[in-house]
Length: 231
Image 1 (cartoon, helix red, strand yellow):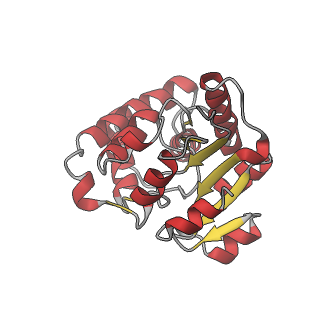
Image 2: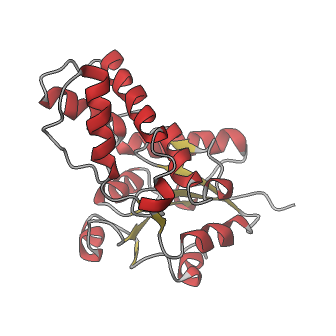
């Protein structure tokens, strides 16, 4: 049996799925639940980790942003998402080609697929599960947004998890990171991974190239183009 020697790490929001407008809705409810405070500062979220976003929100509202406070906000945020599970498939969608790309890579014995996402692990599961994408990835291989303010740390965490599960390990240039924001690209490049920009988010193809993307795709609709990156 062929041992996997390629590690593909996916961002979720605006790379695999689109759930526009729900993120700040959930943070608004979570901040009120956790602190009794009305959300008035909405930080940018693209490519940021949940720890980064939560820390900024708490600080901007004059609230403590220590680890315990951040984790209380995480818990309330998870509750807000879980209250809206029936809304996810109605308000959101899997982006064109996402299912086909994941399926095509899942059929390859030389490939392992995981996540590098700013989402909390529980929220990542819900977002992917709403569209049946969770079954196509190894969610134990992931860098998740509770872990660090720094997205590059999430890449390191995902590679470490993959190496633990697949003891031969993965060369840096055998790690391929797909994401829609410059933060995704710079995090991948920090570790010497192949950075693939997917221009389905708020950043243009030109912005993703300027951030250092090795490859830029308009979207994931061309499965052959996705597979060609791994040649």
